[in-house]
Image 1 (cartoon, helix red, strand yellow):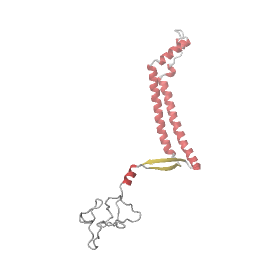
Image 2 (tube, one colour; image 1 turned 90 degrees about the vertical axis):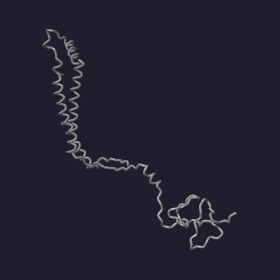
Image 3 (cartoon, one colour; image 1 turned 180 degrees about the vertical axis):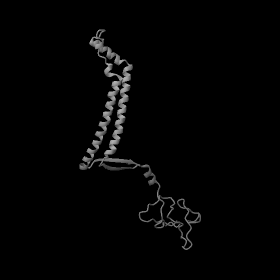
Image 4 (tube, helix red, strand yellow; image 1 turned 45 degrees about the vertical axis):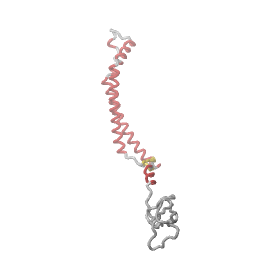
Length: 206
């Protein structure tokens, strides 16, 4: 049976380092030197070899740099963060409101004109106006002798008359919408001077 602490003897799967030249040889033990740790330093699991700030002698060097763990950084990178900011609208530029409202009103007016034309053509192709004219003749009892006194419905709902009234309505809509929007901007500025304006909460996700 080989003596305890002989050459090649291992303990716990580790080979003890050779003693330094200046220190006397350990007597009769063959065990490695104990590893000491500073206060607050975590200890590795049993049976693992320490590295980094622990030299070959087994005693960690105080103040040596330790390798940071990558797990907290990876966990923080996967979590999103939302930033919120509370803003207050204290003034609205009336000139910018007037320009935007004018363009929107023009767009609404064009939509009204196009929609009216499409609707009139659809009703005319379906024969709705002819049916209404025939019904009016039957109600008024129109005959050959009263042909000159009959009411002609197309004189009032003709395509030209409908487009003229629709264009007039679109022009009035542009003027009124632009004026009301600009007036609303002035009223809001006056009210915001007393109340502080409307508060908004904006959120930004990272």
